[in-house]
Length: 355
Image 1 (cartoon, rainbow, N blue to C red):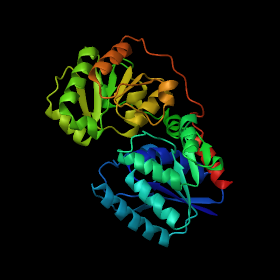
Image 2: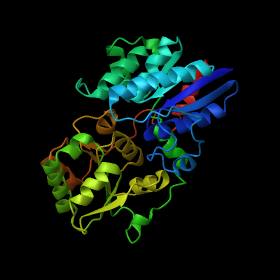
Image 3: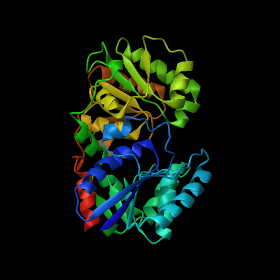
Image 4: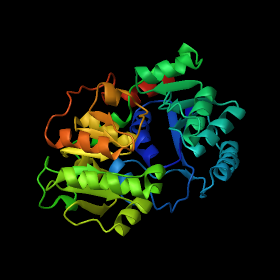
């Protein structure tokens, strides 16, 4: 019997492990525990999340809740060490590139366990980004590197990973999208709005939120180009508070509180276009063939730009205005689905683990 620990550090990780959980549950001689670095009352884990994803809440909450990344790393290492002392574990699977993810990876390897990194080989090539350091450490320690595309596999190879460790399994987010395609629920914020006749705007990056003057320029560009096209902005936390304080005209950007997973899935899959700073949202837009503008100078998955519907504009309000004009005028580029973004990533991963 293989004992797998699925380690998660933030809300988006659950969306990626949900299909993996279902694939493991269909497999003989394999069992898992779902571990979360945070607390059981974490406000980002809304009550509906696990029902929407059709998975159980984590088996274990490590209970770490702090802002300082170095303190968080140390506390997660201590708590995860304690977990591994009490639970038989053969393989630890860590997701993405958080400080908590790196902490779990270090502990797993110090205990001589096999370590798998889900969504490996992603890079910004900016060593000043804390997440870039996390990525380098996690990939360097991992025995199995599960990548989403050719570009990520090539990065892992160039950095010295042995070929037998690298598996291009595809983008596991697409597994979740396919699974929930017929389960989306139309959110109340679309009442009176026609499908395909609205834009979606999401915002979360600290760098964008910190430069209020530039953010205002971007918001002005969006309002100017959108005109009478509704711009729906489901935001949470600081982003919601900041845009609320800016007193945007009600006819421009329509703020709404964060949506459930199934509501948000409907919102983005039926939009005319999306403006976001989220890599995950851009990846989902490519799968749904919805035009997408990303407010960043790089993307973890370049396939979304080279093949998909995504365009990068950085933090440049003028570039945003230019691309948004193309979007609303229906002059967007032709796109296609990247290789292995087919909804079978979890199956491939479990087959590799069992072999």
